[in-house]
Image 1 (cartoon, one colour):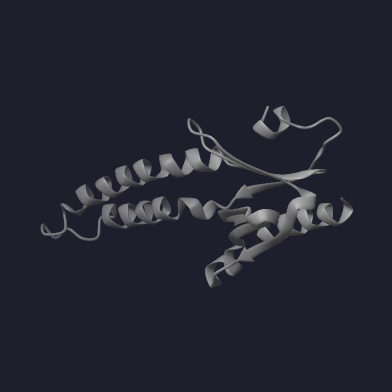
Image 2: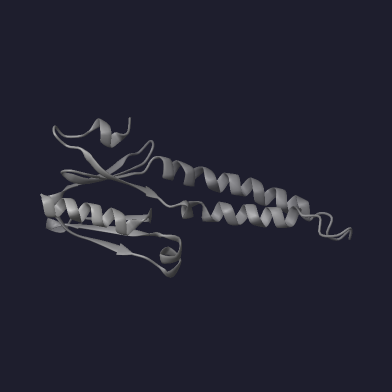
Length: 155
C-alpha cells in the first residue's frame, strides 16, 4: 500500500497517478552503451585488446549510478486525488507536498526540446500564500496538470 493510499482523507479517492520518466536512468544507459562499445572486440590489434577493461569499468559504474535513480523513481509518488495534489519523495528521509485543490493557483509545465520529444517535463505547483513545489522528470506532465486542474475546477 502506497503512502497516499494510507493517508487518504474520508471520502477522498485517487483520480490520477503520475510517475517519473525513464530519463532518470539516462546516465546509466549512456554508461552501459559506452561499456558495450568498449567491450566489443574491435580488432586483434594488441593496442586495442585492453579496451574491454574500460568497458567493464563503465558497466560497473552504470550499475552504481542506476541504484540511486532506481530508489528515487521507486520512492516518488505523484497523485491527484479528489481533494488535493500530493507529491511524496524519499525512502529514509521523506518529503511530502500536499495542497488542497482550492489552494492551487497554477501548475506550470516546463519542457525542453528533449522533454517534448521523449514526453517528460518539470511540474511547478504554485499555491496561494507562496507555496511552491518543483517536481522534475515527470512522465506525461501535461496529463498530470490537466487532471489536477480538472479537479481544481470541480472543487
